[in-house]
Length: 444
Image 1 (cartoon, one colour):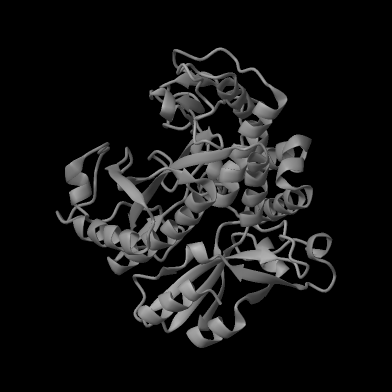
Image 2 (cartoon, rainbow, N blue to C red):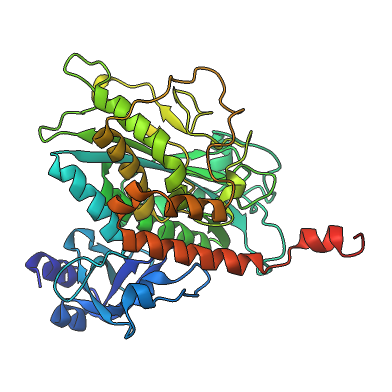
């Protein structure tokens, strides 16, 4: 075991280690090991089928993906992800693991391996993507009845928010104890959180991350979601990363800002004279061409498509424009060094590894194929609402039919991910909603 890790555990008097991986949904799976066992083993083993769980805990027929015997995979700790868990009652550490076959090759079903696969394509050309996610989420009142609509929690005033409070400082201050503890946890957890704002919805917040390398940011987002939920529970409320948790409120996104550096650290989206480069426009064209097919990875649940609706601060198109928030692809105002593209399609309910992999794959294909973008949109693009899938079933079909994305992400992974989502959709489709009972039971 690495000496740095041994020193970390000893200096902090760590008793247990949470050994975690992310499954396809983005849920943390793994084992909690006593420190001594963790140090002696140096790795953990889990069934490959763990990666194939739906969000409600079912699995499709996994025979084509893991084999008839449901074999183990070896999970190796990535020492760069070692952290202390700040909210644990005892001294507990956490480390994210990479999934490997017994011959040392990556398990292609692992979301972290999918992102590594895409980043390796960039690295082969001397490129390094830089990303910065913006994460929206809701604070809601605790409820044990899933049939009741969610509601904003009570703040220090003793009253729930009754209207939109975009960028309100007072609305954020209503939950000062929660945010003070969350800020402390994020610092102790080394998550690199940068900015907090109140978003448009009642109880909706947004956290921005400092920009960085894509795998590191995906790890931080993965851990951040858990930190927010744990902190909320400590304060008697819930935090939800559903894409559309409340009927009349805006949805929650995870906008991803992205640029690409060369081996010398120069932004390849800008020329030496500061103009937008050909690769910049190729990248945008790749997002235009392939985001529709990649939407299943950016909107992975039935609820995701309730967010992607017109006039609700969410894109329904893959148009692009300069500082135009009605477009699915926005180019923020910036200097040449910081020239970047913002993909506004992903919801906050994504698996961060897969969302990062998907948007970077789209841009990569644009550069690889030398694609040319459409003209930028200068007015509102709200009228364009037929370019993205309308529901989960449509998104599954589009991803299945996109061979270029399958080749980049891994054909076996794409097949398995689509099967997981087909099972989720089938399970959801059996549910009889309250709307159906209200409007159909006695009237048809």
